[in-house]
Length: 147
Image 1 (cartoon, rainbow, N blue to C red):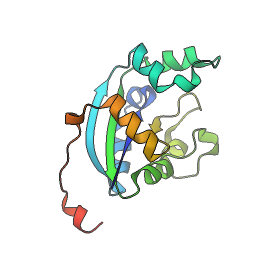
Image 2: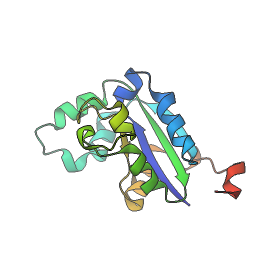
Image 3: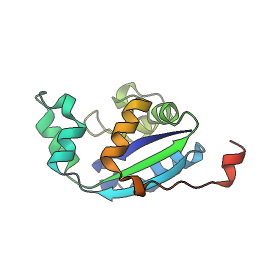
């Protein structure tokens, strides 16, 4: 069982798509074990996007990520990282496959709706960045026994 991080970005919140995206995640038999809305401060953005800080577009990225709250989700399930990455689609919505979240909802590469951890190792680091240990709820769903 893996747990991964998802961030519903400001454009998801601004466009009223939280419920739709969460529903799609739940329909993949994944379990939401943590969920919270938060306004990102400079420190968390700088840490999360440290690999992009030297890029010329970083100030715009930071402004975008602070333009509205984000919804952070901790999601667990069998092969959760790969499942979510497949459901999410390519970072650039123009390259995303039909039926993926980014194909269906993202407007541009800059406003691409969602972040999903790209590996189990990254997920572990990112979950610690956005969730305290006590904010992750372990519980059994009836479907855990059949999936």
